[in-house]
Each structure stands twice: as C-alpha cells, then as structure tokens.
Amino acid sequence: MNSLKLAGIAVRNLLRNSRRTLITVLVSSAGFAALAIVAGYMDFTFFGLQEMTICRGFTSSGGTGHIQIFRKEALQKEEHYPLEYGIADSEKLQQAVKLNKSVIATMPRIEFNGLISNGEKSISFLGTGVDPKKETELIHYWNALEKLSSRKLMDDSVYKKLETTSSNGVLLGEGMAKAMNAHVGSSLMLMGTTVDGAVNAVDVTVAGVVRSSMKSIDRYYLVTSLETAQSLMQTGKVSKIVVVLDKTSNTDIVRPLVFAKINASGNNPEFSVIAWDQLAEYYHSIRDAYRIIFSFIGIIVVVIVFLSTTNTMLMATMERVREIGTMKAIGISNLWISFLFLYEGFFIGLMSICGGMALKIIFSSIINNSGFKMPPPPGMSSSYLLKIFFAADFLPWISLLILFSTTCSGLLTLFKIRKLSIVNSLTHV
Image 1 (tube, helix red, strand yellow):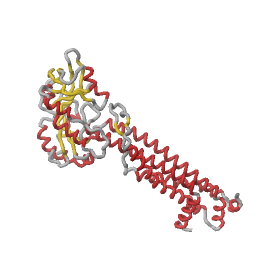
Image 2: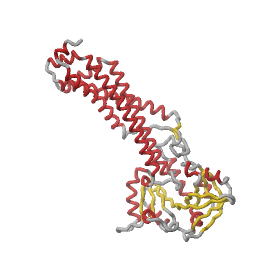
Image 3: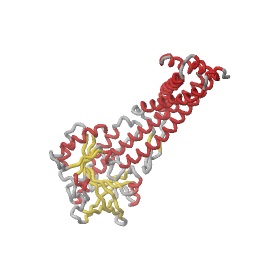
Image 4: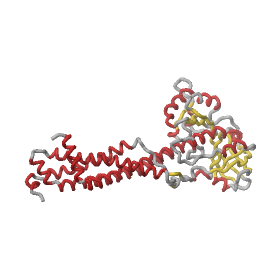
C-alpha cells in the first residue's frame, strides 16, 4: 500500500457517499467564507481607521499626517510656558523635508488653548492653528484613495472660507457653536496666554461650523489660521510640522530619511520624527478590541467545521466496519487505514477551500454593492458604508486553518479503528 493508492481510494470513498460529502463540504465552505468575509471586513476597518487617523484624526489637533516633526525636548520635557520647545524656523525645515520625492505636503501647526467668548458667555477651547491652503492637501489625499472607493469624500470648502476670511477667521465644532449660539459671520473673542506669560485677546469671526470626528471633542474644537494663533500667543514658532506622503506604506522608508535630512550629523539630534502609528492611541485601542472579537468568531467557526467533519468521519467509520476488517485481514496496518481517513479529510478541506472562495466572492460582491451603512464606531459621530476587502494576506492562513481542521478530524477515527478486531469487524452487521 502506498500514498497514491490511498489517495485514490479516499477519493472513491468520498464519491461513493456523495450526498454526505456534499453536505460536509458545504458546511466547511460556509465556514471558510465566513472567516474570509470577517477577515475582509477587518482589513477594511483597519485600513479605514488608519487613513482616517492620518487625514482627520481623533483628537482636537486634527489628522496626524504620515509623519510629524517635533523639537526633541517637546517630547521629553514639560514646557514651562507655551511653545517653549516650539520650532522656530519652520519654513527652512519644510523646504528640507520637501526634497524627498515621496513627500507631497508639509503643514506647520500650533496647538494652543484658552477661552472663547461671545460677550455673555465664555468656555474653554482646544485650538489648532493651521495653514488653510496646506491643510487641504490632506483632504485631497483622502479623496484620491482608490482602495476606499465607497468612502464619503471630504469637502475642503471650510478651509477655503478660513483662508478668505479677512478678520481672523475660525472654524468651530458643532457643539461649541451651539454652546456659544454662534453661526457663520458671528464675532467672538479668543483669550489665551502669550509665550511671555501675559494674557492676550484677539477678535475673530466664525468662518464655518464643522462636525468633529469625535463627539467628546466637538464642544471644544476650534481651528484658526497660523497667523491668528501666532498673533494671540505673540510668537513666530510652531508646535510641529505634519508631513503627508504619497502612500502610507512609504512611512517606514521615508521617516529615517527625513530624520537624517533635518538633523545635523552627531549624537544629539535636534528634532524627533514620529510616524503616525506612534501618535494614534484611538486606532490601536479599536484595533486591539476588533482583533479579540474577530479571533473569538474565528475560533467558533473553526470548531463548527471541525465537529461537522468529525461527525462525517465517525459515521463513515461505523458504516465501513466490515471494509476496515477486510483491510486488516489482508495485512493493512491500523496506521495506513487511519491515513485513508486523513486523506478523505484533506480532500474535503481542498473542496471546502474552493467552494468557500466562490461563496466569499459572491457574498462580498453583494455586500459591496448593496450600500449597507454601519453605525458610527464608539465615540464617533458619523456612519460609514460597509465594504469587504479581498484580504489576500489572510486567505492563506484561513485556508491552512480549514485544511488542518478537516484533516485532523480523521485522527479521531484512529481510536475507533484500533478497537476493532478482525473477527468482529468481518461479522459486523
């Protein structure tokens, strides 16, 4: 007896019980398709969160971009006054970074806070000073993403309004605008601390009302121009420089090149260059939670497939007791007989993978073209269209998992086969 003969016998046994084989293959195929669809949804979710973090962010300071540049001390020490460790000559730094071909935009930003008042009421804000013209590059990057064809396109008109507002324009979150009873054109006052520790105030005009990506920060969200923020704080420094690349996958390649470019040779670099994923706490918390959920679903599906295939193998063993006794009588060992059932489980796994792939493609196509909307993730304010990615990186692992499950289900028959004696097997009815 050799492996090729056993494989041929295993195929004939599966065809002999075609109805039972078909049912088992359908169950296993459904398990493969379920895992593949979940993996496709997981891939879509992680990619969407990744790009949303880069383009819009989940904090009051906006999208992280692909890379952020800080003064080294800003990450290591506590500032005694605003922008103590800010970047002074940001234009020179931006010109150096732009020399890299993968860089499509650099954006200086100032992070500051203070009070905003309408004359009758004052509330605190978390503000960001930006260059409106450069900030639109992040929106253009998002709108050009091909992998998220079903996404909601971002509108850059609010930044254009901020750029064209003559008297210190500001963008307010919906929650803040409602709390201040403000609308487009309303006059407000920003009060904050200068870099010298003095209190300063600037009159501003509401250029637009926007919906922040996070409900928790919508009431404190404020964006203004770089000039207005610098005027309020009486400084020419910026907090950081945000760098936008042509592709997220280039981040790990470009980051060390930018670091080497902006830091003079030596053991004491002046600037730190941080990748987006080191700044994305919300992204990592959601990703970890989803991984636990998806792993739990995967375990359940694999157990169902294993039990279904095991049931098929044990039924086949009981129906073929006399056949097993005959093989033992002509000198075939228990090990080779067990291999026969392992081959059957292996071929069921192969057929399940093919069937599961077909089911996955069909149902993914239906879902992607159905226009289903998912509710907002925890803490967010907007829903999104459901999409299933192909998830090519996950498919080999899912295939191995299904194949391993169906093949190993034949191992349980080994215990049953060993208990069968030749005499009892041949006389079994």
